[in-house]
Image (cartoon, rainbow, N blue to C red):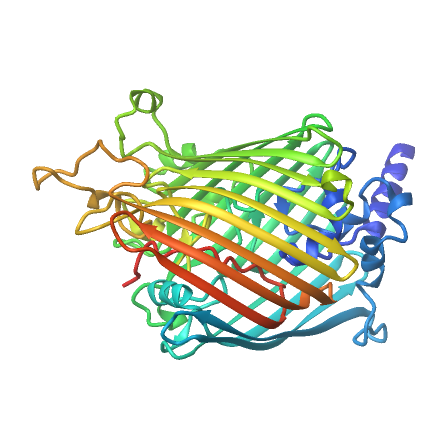
Length: 537
């Protein structure tokens, strides 16, 4: 009885101190805590984003963090003009604004712009419940290379279907969720939003490249382990003309298990499965077999006799210094060791891997972050024989923006001082570009059965190598200087310059010089280093 009473008291303390609020999935918003979260003495599972505010408050070195901008921001997170305790809820919110103009030098229509408005609102109901809602609408005219991308994908960069014509397009997006904390071990969240698994600038597991989607997420944390169950509803927008009721529904289920083996070593396992909601023979809907929170999906898939798209990933992360991190990912869609060793380009060898290093307070500059990262994806990874089950949502890849059949090297530097920020991003990528009637593994929206056929009868199984059949090299550089207006939403005044050079093999070089200036809300991550990989029908 005494032990039970003590346990109940401890549970009560856990509930009272629980804070379910979630930080937005934005590098701009996360920046004040990044160095401390990745430090040697932190046990936070930083590969699982978005972050929980309670995890940020629990970071080690509380004495040294007190009074810093990061801790001050946490204290101010719940205080502004929208605060109210009259209804038993604690409210907070603010505006989301976008108003920028730019010049795409050398393009047919040189003037670019982005105009948008919206708001975000959060509330805490006691210590167990929290709520979040944000929404924004835009009218936009992109730089030429991004306008071509929007034409092909039919959607803005992770922000919804693009309505309109080449002169200007409109789009909107919203996120909302409710979180419940029954005790210190569990956090349950249901709503609409994005997620990111990985330590890199990119992720081959699950990234925030595509648009938002409905989800149910269960976070479980104990000892040195954090385990995430994520169940989602996603869309295939092809042929729907932007009418949501006409989208083909598909579902996905993900597991991410993160284990801090030591304070320097973290290992993680990722698994996911994607399946269509309606089969030709019967409306399948959400398969309850994938609700099992602990078993691997591939055995479930085989036991059901289905051809669902299942993937498996492994991650290894090491902290070699006090505030540096070496990280890696390996993603397996299909794998046959003998075929890999043979090196004959078997189409079924669908793998991707990532290697990276990030250093905070580099060269003893307290607010300088440096990152170097290499990404490699084989042809046909993330594709499927049934294209409704490919690894994509709303016209965009769920992992890397380039999809498949590429290698990329990128470096990033970011310096901050109080509200000022200067960042530089440089990447060089080599991609394979499909031509003609056959697929060489670059288009994740084509079935793998569309492979090249030498005899015109059966698709060839071998001879598929990275950057085939036409090699395209892309150099991308972006420099941003900004002053933060509201750190909670990433709202800032900024000036930016993009230099992009696209060099297809045997063709003329295409160069973009794009300048822009204005006010931008960075509650959502936008990746400007993209390339047309397919055209949705």
